[in-house]
Image 1 (cartoon, rainbow, N blue to C red):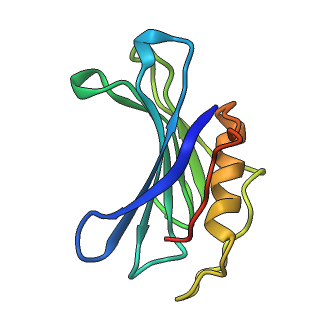
Image 2: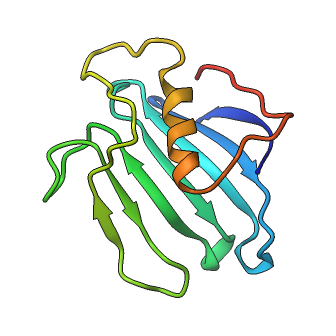
Length: 134
């Protein structure tokens, strides 16, 4: 379950990073968080990550690349890594809202994507979750 609101920071001149804390009942995976990365030059190509652990033990358990092609995928796809160093699996999702490639993204789009991504990660939003557009 998420804890608190999403906080946005600027990572460099063009990338906005949103983070929201996620509680976990598995101490070895703490701390967990959801991360959103938005390149302002490519706003219709955001990336989402479910990050677990800290420091050298941190890993990206799940990743969503929206409209970002790399072999063998022509567009939107997800990556999944299981704890313990298993192989990364990638696949095309059928549960992610469509985002047209365009220079502007309508308000609410990133939140809808975050909610769909979190659902696959079995993350629910706490009553104290607050959203703000990047």
